[in-house]
Image 1 (cartoon, one colour):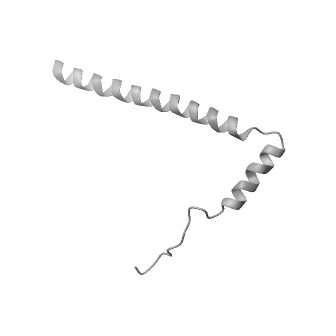
Image 2 (cartoon, rainbow, N blue to C red; image 1 turned 180 degrees about the vertical axis):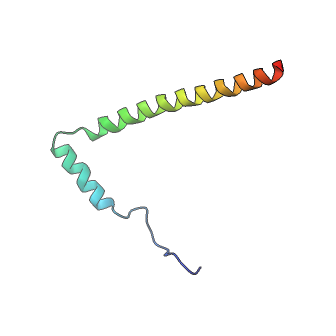
Image 3 (cartoon, rainbow, N blue to C red; image 1 turned 30 degrees about the vertical axis):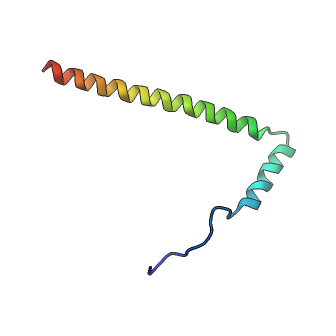
Length: 67
């Protein structure tokens, strides 16, 4: 209660963001395609990391059972 400032922040800077996106599109940059590609690649990378984590945990469990 002694610090901070309550304010609506969800839309803060949204006009500037819309302007940046419009400028990118006007420059021939397909920002929608880039976003889709980043999302797809991000999901693939997350899945790989998660699979690696699960594999590491399985190995640790297996090694504990063998001792």
